[in-house]
Amino acid sequence: MSSSPPAQDGKRGALTALARACAYHPVRTLAIWATTLVAIVLAANTFGGALVNEFAIPGSESQSAVELLQEKFPERAGDSAQIVFAADDGTLADESARADIAAASAAAMDVPGVTGVGDPYAGKGGGISEDGTIGFVDVQFEQPAAEIDDAVVEQLEDDVRAAVGDTDLQVELGGTVMDSVQPESHTSEILGLVAAMVVLLIVLGSAMAMAIPITTALISVGLGMSLLTIAARFTDFNEVTPILAVMIGLGVGIDYALFIVTRFRQALEDGEDPKQASVTATSTAGRAVLFAGATVAVSISGLAVVGIPFVTKLGMGAAMTVVGAVVTAVTLLPALLALVGHRIDWGRLPGARRRAAKRGDDDNGVFQRWARFVTRHPKALALAALSVVVLLALPATDQRLGTADAGTNPQDTTTRKAYDLLAEGFGPGFNGPLLVAVDQSQDPQATEKVASAITDDPGVATVVTPMVNEAGDTSQIPVILTSSPQSEETADTLHRLRDDVIPQALEGSSAEAYVGGATASYEDIASQIDSRMGWFLLYIVGITCLILTMAFRSIVIAVKAALTTMLSAAAAFGALTAVFEWGWFGSAIGLDVTGPTESFIPMLVLSILFGLSMDY
Image (cartoon, rainbow, N blue to C red; front, side):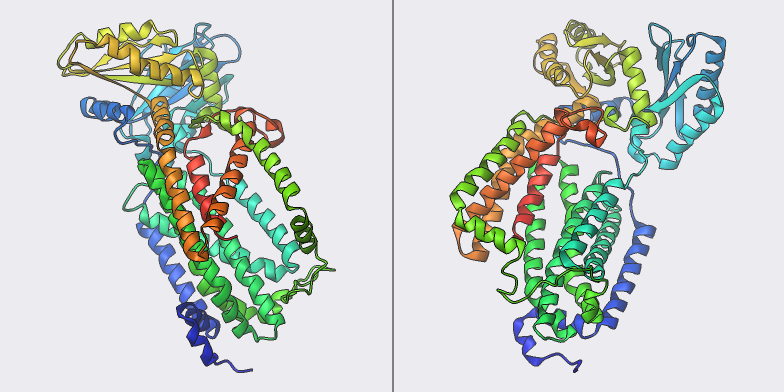
């Protein structure tokens, strides 16, 4: 068997030449890959940047509030954590409870970066519920949560718990700083990987054929994540980015490798030697991989239409893993297949049948029979399928965009326990206060006017005493609402304050007031995305139709693909709304609380679906 490549392969273009170079020199290819991976991983570990938990919305009112307060209240530019106490027996007025709270406060004050700790008994930077059983203290840091090292946050919790020791007092920690660091859980990725392994094993019929796509997918994800870490050195990526990038990277990595592995097995059955079979597979199925990867990356780029930097960078992070999957599929995979050769069927399942490469060899297969059945009854089955899809999609008409907070964290986390205790002791709106920033440089009475008007709103529970900066030209007014941060009532109150209450209070005044805070920021994100959804759909449908028309020279195929993808997305959003917003079957998946759909999910899902639909 000759190891030199057939000369005629050179006529097929650059992809064939690349595949031939990798397949006929597998050891060299693996060595180059190993060297490159080590270099990239080392660079990521040495020069890589940190991810941030930041949601800036340029031009929004909440961002204006942030910028004004950062300028006028530099001493409060940092974020805070909250230590929450609950007395199982007695009240927090008991001497033992006072001692524990004092010990916890002293321990928190000694944590690096902490500039102040509140006093719940004095009502300054803390408070105690009316029944005296629940209280909290604010722990102020000099830096924003995104800039605080995870080790410092972990030290805060460890030191506080060590200070109170074995006590009857329940101690939990929450707030912005604690929310910025959550225990990493890779359960979803592991479950997805195991499910993929089972499906591939059944479909491909052998352990080796299953292992190769899984291996290349994991390598491509590692490559993409390392590139993301390096990119984070130069620009900010949100902490959510790796979760989405890994999910997408695993999916497309397995998908692309599966294309080529299936074609490789067919080429072997046609009598080609392993190296030539690898070249054949990559030069044919590999072209589909290049096309699919490019369209996914282009589709994801549509997230830039939203105009929110962190959403745009979610797409950038996902695109890195997609590019990694494509590069792995057309370079590393040909070398692996050439080395494995006929051992691709090693670990064959008992009774498993190899898929025949030639048409007609498996006319009695399940999919062949199903395809014939569908083509014999196209109208009836199309109507039935459309009915099911429409039924699934109906809940999507009630979908509400928002952002999850600690109230949706697992029940056993300290942030969720702190959230629930604060809601119990101080009301549901306590966990998501609004922060009104008032520029009163031209009207010293502006703060009083705004605070008085806000107090009369039915959605407001409490207006905390305003804090004025040293110059006396700016104030901040914490506003506690009667509803929880994720509720529709909170969104309604926010818009009412912005559109009616505050403008009326400042009518005729030159003062400016901006409603900010985390809750307002999340609502601004949802509103921005909702306002850009039409433009996004126009872009995503237009670009995919254009690509498909260029590929197949048929506008009909392009329109059909767009319509079926939209129907699939609508059904998915309907099911998502029914489960996560309405609570259907929630107990079956361990869901104990409902909430709005994460604001960026619809756009992200649509961009991925339209990209992946090009494969098929």
